[in-house]
Image 1 (tube, rainbow, N blue to C red):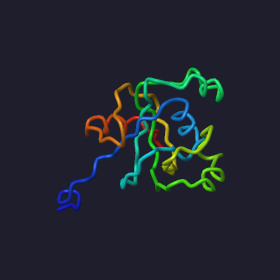
Image 2: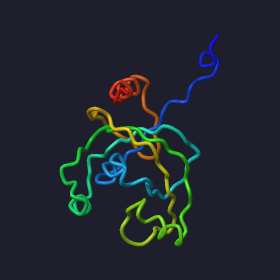
Image 3: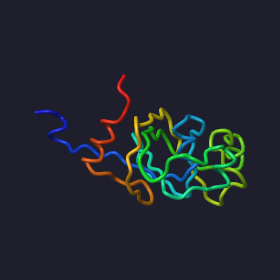
Length: 146
């Protein structure tokens, strides 16, 4: 009997991110996603792009035509750290956020972005959300082959 036959495998999670942040993450230009909440999950994380975009930031990063409304790739959520002013300022080139640090801010440290060969349209949810096994298989099949 295989180990996976005995213990259920935790489904991958997904995180919905507004543009231009999602594209900056997938291109490797942004490695920390700022959130106001903490979570215990660590591991593979599908990146979902919301339908809304911050038009001003998209213009600032020259990403006005970036895809919206579905899944674009996968990253690894390696850790989550709580920001203080020192870390916020020191890591500004990694989170790319403009303006002052939120009152409660956590940095989701992301690594190893892998873009899907083509985006997959679909809805997202708030927080880290589980995706269905069928969607997970569809996304896995669209990862680049080595």
